[in-house]
Length: 309
Image (cartoon, rainbow, N blue to C red):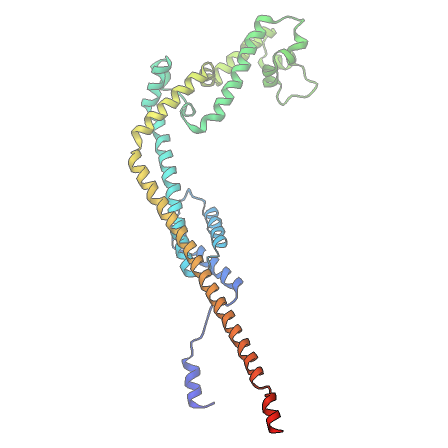
């Protein structure tokens, strides 16, 4: 090898990294997982879910080059900002709804005592209290059917308890054998001398363990309206709607600008490809025309041959 060739070899730029499309995709995904913004998630945020969303965007836009990756990051950051704003506002409202003054206002509007306000459970005023409110409705049915059975009880009604008092029956018989009888289970559970006394004990147990559920269920619709009104009041107090809307609009504009940038890049590349294909087609046509002209000019002239003769 000559000295010049050796210098050329030593000065050559050695290309590293993936060369195939699949290799570039894998490298791009690895880069996403180590990207700076992925390390900025909060402890409560699902990093794996966010990564899956980001990779889905990468596939959708074919964003395996650095330019598109940077644009996708701005889209991700804007979307994350919108989600965080919504979450923070919700948390702020939830915190205010658990304040002591909310319970006091509720008790005053609902006609309950001031002492009751100090013992109200959190689920009265929470969005996550829907399950407890459904339980309250069920417990009230059991309570009312137990009272009704006390007033209507007779030996003749005993065989029809399952059909006439279904909520009470299922409450007591849950987990019992199929062959078990209501009155026998009632007696074993409350250990009183008569069925009526056992039913009174059942009611006492409901009042003790489900007191707040029963209070809520006895006027649930009105209480829920009061809670909704208090929540609206706290939203108005806690959130500057103008400022919140401006911030949300700013983030939405960032997101839309990122999407428009990706669309523009795709259009530029598509136009460049179309121009390249058109140039290639013209070149091929010119080459074919030259071949035809050359073939025609090389053919012998019949008049010239006749003159030579």
